[in-house]
Image: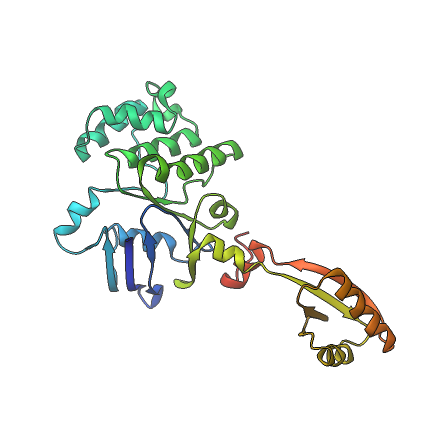
Length: 303
């Protein structure tokens, strides 16, 4: 079952299409990474799913229900979210802030202690939030989103501004949620390295358009090995390789070949030398996930 489905989802601001014909499928029980450069439309999409922004066109289903009319309120009671930066009352303690949210959501009183334990803030529950570090404020925002044990948790850039220790802690919390509580987590980020360490399913958007959606393993599958060969006459070398039924293509001064066994590579270089071709360099390469991300998004600035 998909816990979120969008079909042909669009959002236009003035003459600019911020989200264009987006079809998302979020499997239940997954950590679903929503990935794209800054300004790609991630936050706008999540706000539409939560009913905070009205779509220009398209449909949204959450927990099997259409997000239209009064019926969406019953769905949203089963959804927790942390969009952009967390909101809090700085003059109140962490526990007092959570008590307010607990009352508004109609969650059991005991849930406040439970979520403080989940995000490891029990020791700071009586400290005023104005004195919290940025990482503690992020964890408090996550605790508020977890009140009532939602079936779906939506987190927009939850590691923004955190130091390395805070990032690692937030990652671990997010990874543990589906297994511990049966939640589905949608987490957005502009950093592939973050999603790679948290998610099992991934969607990538570029300028509001979906360019990839599948499992993380499928994304890793694009990172294939190949050989890169450079000779003193690549045109002639490519013709000779065709005679030996070795597929190749030219790319930026290199011949790109499939990975060969060591003995086959040795025979190939010997064959080229026998035909008076100089082998300048032969190396094994593999596209990194960052390379794949750049190919999908066309953006280097986000890395």
